Image (cartoon, rainbow, N blue to C red; front, side, top):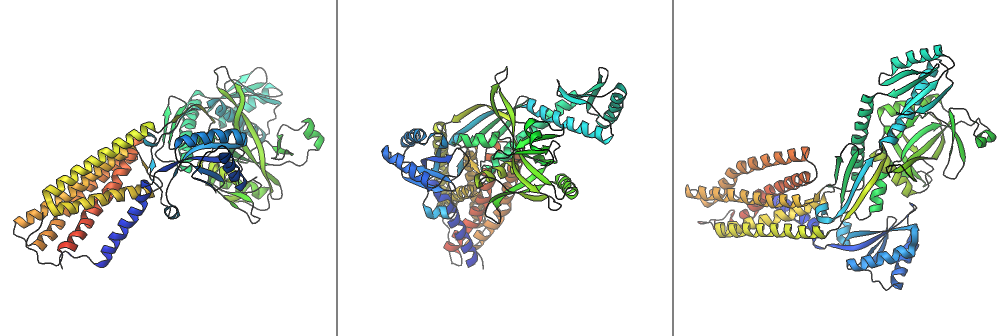
Amino acid sequence: MLNHYSLWKYSMLVLTLLVGFMYALPNLYGEDPSLQITSAQDEEVNELTSVQVRTILEQKHIASKSITLMNGIVLARFSNPDLQLLARDNLVKSLGENYVVALNLAPAIPNWLAMLGATPMKLGLDLRGGVHFLIEVDMDTAFNKQQEKIRDTLLSDLREKDISYVMVRKIEGYGNEIRFRDANTRNQAISWLASNHRDLVINSVGNNALSAKLSDDRLCKDREYAVQQNITILRNRINQLGITESLVRRQRANRIVVELPGIQDIKLAKKILGATETLEFRLINILPNQTSVVNGNLPENLEVKTTSDGQPVVLYKQVILTGDHIIHSTCSADEYNRPQVTISLDSSGGNIMSNFTKNNVGKLMATLLVAYKDSGKKDVNGRVILERQEKIINIAMIQSQLGKSFRITGIKNYNEAHQLSLLLRSGALIAPIQILEEHIIGPTLGLKNITQGLQACLWGLMASILFMVVWYRLFGLIATTAIIANLVLIIGIMSLLPGVTLTMSGIAGIVLTLTVAVDANVLINERIKEELRNGRTVQQAIHEGYRGAFSSIVDANVTTLITAAILYAIGTGSLKGFAITTAIGIATSMFTSIIGTRAIVNLLYGSKRINKLSI
């Protein structure tokens, strides 16, 4: 039977439209100016903090819409930005340095929508405002780390060949100088090391020493690798924060620009982006007596580190494994409900850990948290000097051979475990970074952009509706219904998908897809009119009109989808936003213009004797 849909097709269409409308609905409620209160000591706040915040606001006669505690964060909502700023000033003074009070914009959606996971669309930096960072990669610290690794490798090679040395020290140019008993031993060492390290420049120094430095070519490659890897890791960290449509790009040799839309908690962004934490796994030596530890009279291959509670522990300097081999980590609770971090290693790291633990069952292994922090000093160029800080977060006995996955316990609280897991999951920075500039971009320009974008979208929609209704009458009205449904579905899908953000280019993509939706309906309507002119009956004309226009609509939309896919693959920033919005819009426009309008036409004209169409 021509022009008839079964019940399941109508049910699918109605369900799709209802879901799209439900997830588009939060965008009508707007956002509340809010304050987010967290602990400055990486500890979760509790109900007492919530009561304290409420008391302070009441004493200062500052009205709040609500104060809630969720996931270790106190969120206070206000009716306008003036109250938000006034409350922030008072809370900062009253709470002191133990808490961080950050400006926020919280979605003002009803609880029933929040329970369904419905949230407004995320807005880009050009619409929402956000944070702009200029970051410099600290290559000096990176090369110093490389210098230490090379030293350990050289000494290990010498021990393997049973070549004894007297002392080793660092020299300029990120090199190492090794001194031997005599020239013959030095020459033997040069011959052995030069054959194993082609990327090192090894020369004789004095009568009985050698120097080993990285070649210029290797230094250039390491610099390029460090910057590119840091860019990749910063993007991973931004994704872990749940920020989409961000911009991370290189500027000059060793600088990176990062833009984060919608972020008002600049402290959290700085903490996540600039974190240098990584892990080192080392073997514990329990033989030295306490006097040797206190006086520092330890062999060259040992050193003292402290636990989080200040207890000294003697470790071997040789690192078993570093955080570079960690590919995934998760935070959870152990069997005693204490925080733990489960770590997964790559194949190389898994083999190293497996071989080491196999040969050292019964010995103690320490997990060392390594970070580079601000030393409070600056160099001659005014840049902050970073210093290496280390603490032992876990000591465990190797009870059996470990593989690619194991867990770390002994972490102070769940917030610290979650933070460590996030950083390890996103990757350890190859080289430490310093934030040279930070700017908070206000949403004033964004409001103007949103208004202009919505006006452009509205006028374009009205012009399309007017044309369709005047030219195609009832069929134009049906097409108008499809266009409105298409817009609702686009907004609903963009609100539902976590990786999609609306920017000005995204608004342009929406306007474009609405135009494409009009084109599809024009093709269908013109094809129906053509079939009527050729003498077809009304039912045949409708059927042939949709069938004949289908291939043209699909061809046109597929070519546009291919273009959008290419833009997304090779583009960055705004181009990606345009490509994503266009792709979503094309999919929804095909659904509404082909299936949606056909369903309405079938309801109005299907299985009926009609001699004339309003088209």
